[in-house]
Image 1 (cartoon, helix red, strand yellow):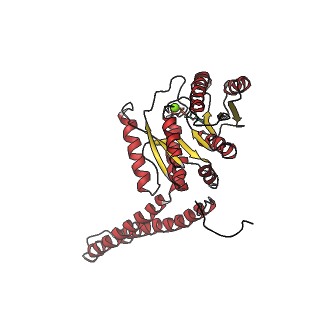
Image 2 (spheres, protein in one colour; image 1 turned 135 degrees about the vertical axis):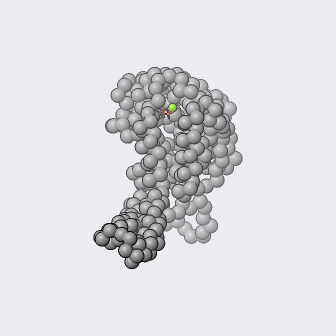
Image 3 (cartoon, protein in one colour; image 1 turned 60 degrees about the vertical axis):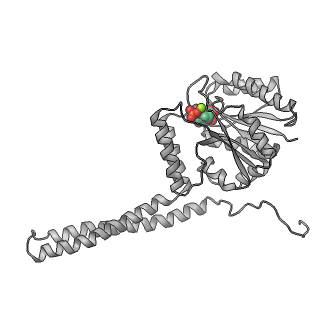
Amino acid sequence: MKKLYLVVPCYNEEEVLMETSKRLQNKVFELIEKSKITKDSKILFVDDGSKDRTWELISFLHKKDTIFSGLKLSHNKGHQNALLAGLTKAAVYADIAISLDADLQDDINAIDAMIEKYYEGNDIVYGVRSSREKDTFFKKFTAETYYKMLKHLGADIIYNHADYRLMSNRALKGLLQFKEVNLFLRGIVPMIGYQNDIVTYERQERFAGKSKYPLKKMISFAFEGVTSMSIKPVRLIFNFGMGICGIGIIALLYFLIQYLSGRTVSGWTSLIMSIWVLGGMQLIAIGVIGEYIGKVYLETKERPKFIIESTLLNEEMK
Ligand code: UDP
Ligand code: MG
């Protein structure tokens, strides 16, 4: 039997915490009863620097029952960092961790299936939304376009999966080898590798309180996703520069013909040529510089170059 940690990031969640804790506790009891997880499994709330009574409630829950544990961040560091804080603890104490939102939009009945898949040999089980029927057209369209764009830019992400997922202890340890500051977990986790699978679930409405992800935060998160996973946008500048330069050179012939046939104002040819050809060259130069900066950027992330799954070595471990 394995020890489970449910990792729940909370930012100003006083309205949902009592209900959430009750439902999660029931779920954990149910799993213990079915002998799927050990009795010392825990529900770990990570208070992401909340300004309301969130931490008070977590402390209260912990006092009542030690199945509830808590971590309090000194400052609001954002959902992804709060999650990582919780998962870092889980990597030390648990065999399995499942991350889910405090508002229970992630259907907790999918947990059973996730654990089933874990016992079937999967190290990572992704919770995937079965449909986006409840979403507005705008949300559906932007989300789809975004996933497609990220794929195109080379990030290996799971369609319609957010941060509801199960990770085994060794997958967690793999995650901790990623040292980057700009965290985009759903982009990094697939890079860990190992056998994985998905479980589909119906995304619920938030049952109380307001979303902590207003449009502004969402846009900056989306941008973070692109820039932390890919340096292709820089290459775009380079290619654009090449294009402009190419057009410039073709246009140059045309301008020269115009000039030779005397159909231009004096000075126009040299001016227009500088604008096009020089403009293109400048973009190429920026692209080249960007390419190097991009390389430096990727190096500073110090991502693991590999994660070993198993070894066949007859040497004594030193
Ligand atoms: N959250 C967090 N820190 C933040 C913002 C959000 O820990 O700065 C948590 C929040 O408490 C919730 C989860 O991240 O458990 C998802 O947030 P929310 O439900 O508000 O986002 P939405 O579902 O509307 O996208
Ligand atoms: Mg939510």
